[in-house]
Image 1 (cartoon, helix red, strand yellow):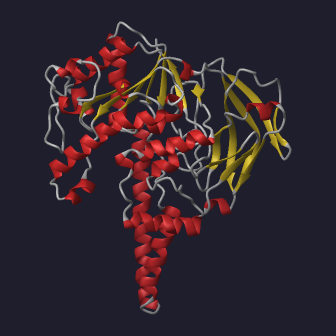
Image 2 (image 1 turned 135 degrees about the vertical axis):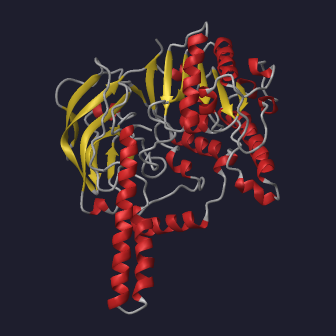
Image 3 (image 1 turned 60 degrees about the vertical axis):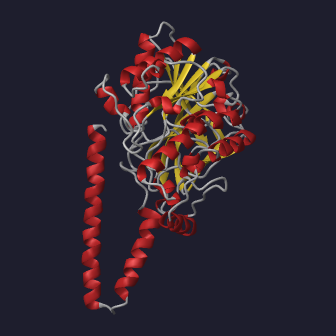
Length: 470
């Protein structure tokens, strides 16, 4: 975690303690000067208000500008926004630009402090992209798939519960269709490939999916079957190993092109720190990765001793890169996605590329998690994906954001429904919070599944940062 993010987290916790202290003092005064029943009533109303409007985890101010730097030479066109549409002020939109991002000021109205501010896009299709309540700063709206409507002068962008600046900048990117190139997907866990790139890999003719870990930890849900902690973890690991091989079949990827490496969850950072040291599971009691490799169609270096070491992981990935010979590798964004396994999965991939005799041309980077905002992408399922909060500028990578049609979005939701880890029932507290937010804040969740990823991942776009391999 960066120093700024640590500082923001400390500020968030400090403000929360101050608010709780003020609330406690108010309750004491209420108990002294008001009827006895006013105190429990105030506690209930305060808790309901918290769940409806203050339960989001934002470790930055909604008034902060997002900061994105794009490569020199990328197309940036001044645009004007008005009641009659979005107009390019100078020049024309390049014909070959398929990924379009509008940089514009977004300012919440008074109602937008209590209801989610929405940017409504009316063009080839209607779209909606939500932002933080109380937003007041620079944001980036995804207009990919709306190029024809923009060129024809028929694209209208306006706010609900917010106002948009009258001037903006349209960033346009041209990419080849990476789904037509040989693709290797690095999934730290079963479901990461589906969350990030189901739309892409389901239309790719030449793709392999490599899952690094068994996904065996946090298996309390399976202890209800009468299993102890270790046995529940082993069962969960077996189920998620199966998911990593079987779920891609729904997207047309045969099992022989899916590889499970069998390393253990949250142990990749320790493995990287001591490359020759074996790190077994924290919860299942296992320490031999071969137990998860029974479905693999080709031999790998770690099959010899089964040791969960960094050296074996990098050797496995090097062998796979040389065997698959991918033109494109899709992996987690190491500067944006903070999950420890995701960061180190990409580190291992880069190390393997360095050792491999085969060099891919392109990395496509995805973010399935954020540290700053656990609701991104904000808003309901089937909306577009606006760029995520970026308070500290990332490396200046171009973007690729292919659009998913309605049928593909349904298929993506069903692919997620095949994942055991996304089928754990919600707790009573989460269900009550959702009911309160639905009634008081107007939020919606999809019918396809209860897990938050059914809302966050099933979108009108998928989003990747494009980084060339040196």
